[in-house]
Length: 213
Image (tube, rainbow, N blue to C red; front, side):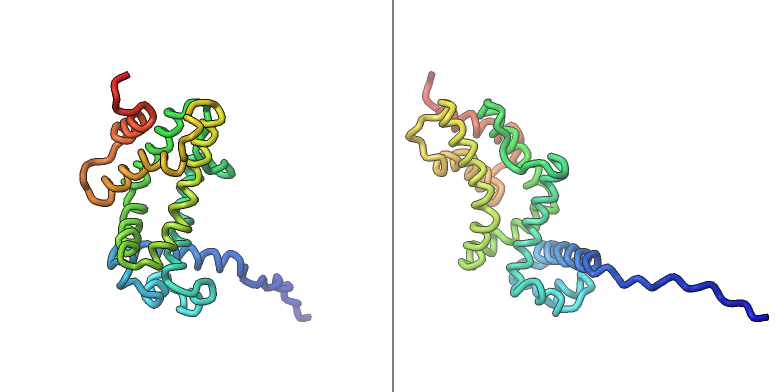
C-alpha cells in the first residue's frame, strides 16, 4: 500500500514592497557614501547601482538623475534622525514652550550634533560644495533641503511675535539668519569650532543685541 506524501505548503510570492524598500534603502546608503568619498561630480548612477547591489534600471525606475537620488537620500536621513531624537510619530519642528531663547538654543544644539555627525557632514559638505558651482543643483538643494528647515524658524519667530516676544515689524526670514547663517559659515569654511556654547551665544546676541542694556 503506497503512502501519500504530505501536501506541500503553498508557495508564497516574494513581498515586492519589502524587496523594493530594501533596495531603496541600499540605494540611499550607497549614494550618500559615494558622494562623500568621491564628490558629486564623480558619483554616477552606475556607481550607486553597483554599490547598492541593484541594477541601473532599478534606480532609473524611481529617479531621473543622480541629484534626485542624493537629495531624497539626504531628506530620508534627516527624517530618520528626527525620529530617533523625538520618537516615532512625533511632529517635526521647533518646540514652542513659550521661551523663545530656550527653544532656539535647543534646536541649534541639535543642528550642531547633526553637522558633527559624519553620516551628515560628509555628504552634506559634498552637496554644498557642488551647489556653489552647479547652480541647478544649488537651487534644488535650497528648495528641497534648506528652505523647509528655515520655514520652521519662520513659524517659531512668528509665534513669538504673536506672543509679544519679538517686535511686530521684524521680518522673521531675515531675523533667522542672525543665528543660522553664522553657524553655516563657520561649519562650511572651518573658520572656528562649532559647539553648544557657540550657538547659545548666537541666540543671545541675536535676541538681545550688542548694545549695553
